[in-house]
Length: 236
Image 1 (cartoon, rainbow, N blue to C red):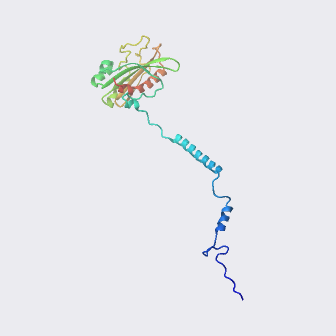
Image 2: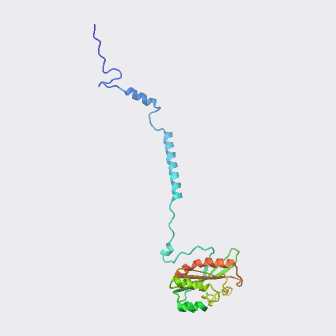
């Protein structure tokens, strides 16, 4: 009987080294995947749109959550004095002075108080402002820097009482002002405050009717007292 030839190692499914040849299978897998794996032009466009959207959202988030700018302290750093505080009215300074002695510019019990407890710094100023109804108001602001907080509190407490005298405002002191300026001798719109060693005293009067008083004058004076700290620190 003739001998049956042995199966060849190089037949279908095997390579020359006795291993299964899977090249055909790999080709079939690639083709069955639905493409060659390359990104189409439409795919590149889609990716570009996604990146653009991410950039836009990131920019919007930065704008919303960016840190606020630091406060502007240029004026103080440049030696131009303290920043002017926010007030409900726009005050325009007309006249100011800086006497060297509080007792000489005061009356009554307050003058005697300064004789026993001299102040360290005194400023006086006149401001004008206009109300929403068009009426114009003159306001006096006086600042007194005392040796300590206790004497400052005593001064303000005395100044708020009747018949104790006061520190003369610039109009009452006889400083030259236009004839149409109102007097400030009735304590209309009077208000005062103290913080630490500093006492700030104010009063107001209407232009054209200096004999009138109402709650608006007190409100104007209260707002003007906010100028006291800067007025005291302003270089003379």
